[in-house]
Length: 164
Image 1: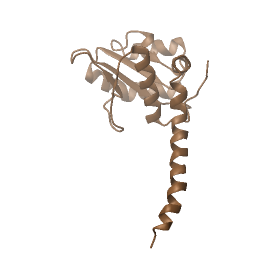
Image 2: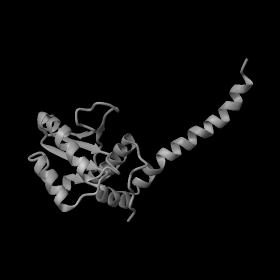
Image 3: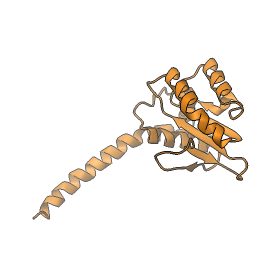
Image 4: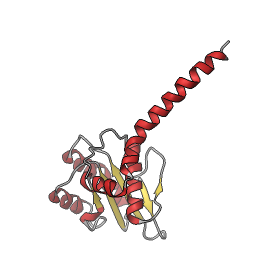
């Protein structure tokens, strides 16, 4: 099983990785939203307006559980209470102990009803190895950079040809 730390991913790339993995796991298409203030909703799935599943992605790789939990308690909990979702899933780049998951479940009771609704570093690594999706997302940031540099290298000499 791979043991990615997710540190090389931007928050946006981490969110896309989570989206890809959960879509494969659940067999559904998840709604995703633009970068910026999202009111605590990164991804959403809904059969009807009454029972949406809200998914929040928190990229705290390198920060640790303490900072993640503090952020959840001080910032995210109020948003979740305001929305009152029937089902809430949390995906983080932080590894969790059973005790960590219990604390998060207590914090988000009744919105998170199972430890299985908390995806940490271990679950995401497990999913990425089984689905082969994670490897693709992991290389996307580097691949995008390489492709953009190749276009720059090709286009710059062409631009010089047409310069005044």
